[in-house]
Amino acid sequence: MNLLEIAVYAVVVTGSSQPFTCSVEARSHAACTNGLTAILRTARDLDFSNGISVRRGIDGTLLFSSGVRAQFNNLGQVAFSNGLNVRKIDDTRFIFDNGLTCRIEKANLVRCAP
Image (cartoon, rainbow, N blue to C red; front, side, top):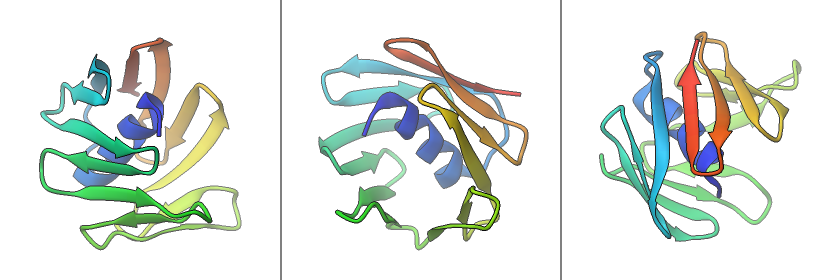
């Protein structure tokens, strides 16, 4: 998982549409201005400071410890069971249906904002 994915998952676990940034703090640690920090345990395992973990299965499925489920919908978006939908625009941007766009600003900074 990369910093952009961490920021996208931070939107999903909080459900918030408030702008924030995430930055790399250490080799496998990230801090976001929405109050979350994240620790990358393995290439597919991530733990947030709010107790929610995200696991990416070998087949690409996402498993949230909070029970949120993800699936592709017929619009090419990932639909989350908490009501959020996100679409990957390119390797640097994801757009949510709640108005946030998460984009890479610098190698160690991702901004999620309208």
